[in-house]
Length: 515
Image (tube, rainbow, N blue to C red; front, side, top):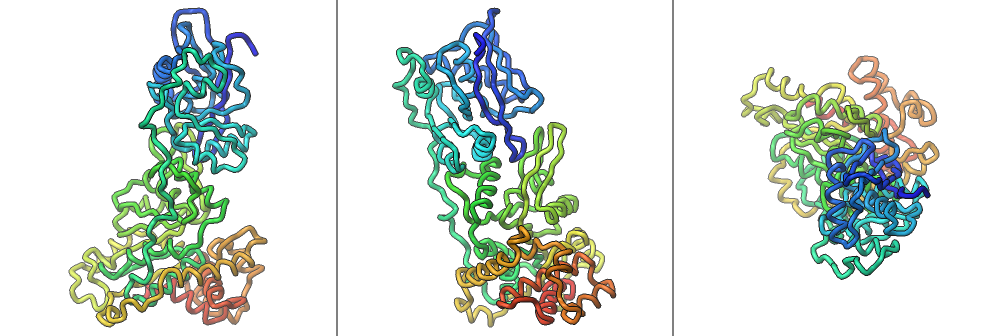
């Protein structure tokens, strides 16, 4: 090692992709100064004062000479306070205050008193380090449980810089080893397993809508629920995640990594096994829904709903450009966001559920005698949901008001557990059929496969062929009806859809348009 130069490692995140950053520290012979090179942002530039105070209060003050920290590669933007610890360890090594660091990766923010504070995005950062061949990880103790979720990671969690420096060979006589902060954030005990899942038996009546919800859950299909206020559209949508199976290991790691980076709640301390549910307000901006913001883009609600449900209540109240921005992830399952500071890609394979009133006043359903809206107002209101977006929605259902007779049968409806078992069985049938193609659900089957390996007989698809010829069904709609039919066949334990399944699927897709 060159005299006066110390090295350590950290991770820079761009979206969910992490890159190993080598931190070089050099102690010069000139007047006191602290310079950080390598495209640091404002938060990282402020690390200089945090590091000096933390080191002094830990009993290992930094050199009074000029300190230069270089973050390699220099062309990669560095953001956030997670580099604090790596820079500190490189500087201490350059001053020969600690022994050789080796390939250890340090990810933590420093408090002025020497505490190691947790940072968000620890899970994708540790995943990137392990994949790059750097399994030895040091994090704040509050991040240790989450970091340990990554297979192959050798994680050590610390509360204070002094204790870490001691373990790396610092002279203990001056270290503040007796300082044991009591107010360090500890990992929470919150778990997705402990969350209360709304039960489907709470929904009175709505037999057709309940059936449509089961089909959507079984095949991973998108839904549009149209109906008057109070019909139960929101209740139905909120119960969809409870029907979905638990996430497999790979999917659970993806979801946990996104939520770790987004930090919308307390940092996850275990894999999120339940599919997420996102319900943004209709005043949300495009950046809040699809991701973005200043600097490098952050994940939005669409990415946080990855492997789960994105519910847009009062869908016509959203800005049209916000709704149309969802067309790309509905097809590709990924959001690529371009900003001046860089490009970030986030997974976004979610089930979209839209809910809408039939008109601005909400009274146009049924006979519509009480509706005060003109025909132009109704067309303008529902026209905010563009045709190309609606064409990507498999199930379009009209939800009617609940009748008094439905209340008389309250408590007799199937619960979530019963329906979820049928959904799981249907998913297993799909997996057996599609696993060789690298697919999981019917909603992911490409059109060439539907017209190739899974091609149905002309007699079975005659009704679809007629609708396509007449122009009442697009080519995309044709494929989506076929996917629905396969899901209906899976729920019915059939090897392939028959003409009845095709008719039911077409009815589910055109129910809202027909009313």
